[in-house]
Amino acid sequence: MSSVLILNGPNLNLLGTRQPEVYGSTTLADVEAMCAKAAEKLGLSVTCAQSNHEGVLIDHIHAAKGVHGGIVLNAGAYTHTSIALMDAIASVELPVVEVHLSNIHARESFRHTSYIAPVAVGQICGFGAKGYVLALDVLADILNNK
Ligand code: DQA
View 1 (cartoon, rainbow, N blue to C red):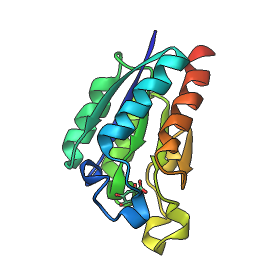
View 2 (tube, helix red, strand yellow):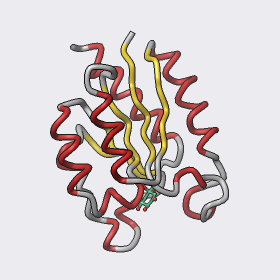
View 3 (cartoon, helix red, strand yellow):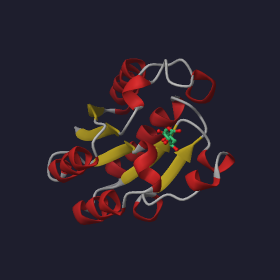
View 4 (cartoon, rainbow, N blue to C red):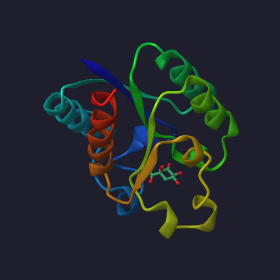
């Protein structure tokens, strides 16, 4: 069975209470439960992790090599700043689907730049928590065609 890492970055532990008008009322636990359910239907297994620390996120990406077939990544604000995360993804050569709950392209201009996008297989944004399920669907196709 193919395994996928669902990795969430800074402040996403506060989902549900954090700016619900932007991010909705779904908690991170809800998102992770949705992912587990969707993964089961797709024949994938999932491991979930969240950190507010850039280096810890990088460690998770490094550790995914040889363990997981792909990564669903919402890097939060590090999306817009972290060359180190971009390099980590490029280094492990795993398919990464970039996810954002909000439509980052319809928000402040500093959110329009993603350092993840050039090394991701694609980006899903603006569909709330459903984006994670869409990302798993995409990864299932990629991993099953291997
Ligand atoms: C986010 C969008 C980012 O710009 C922001 O910094 C976040 C959440 C999203 O899921 O919409 O923390 O990644």
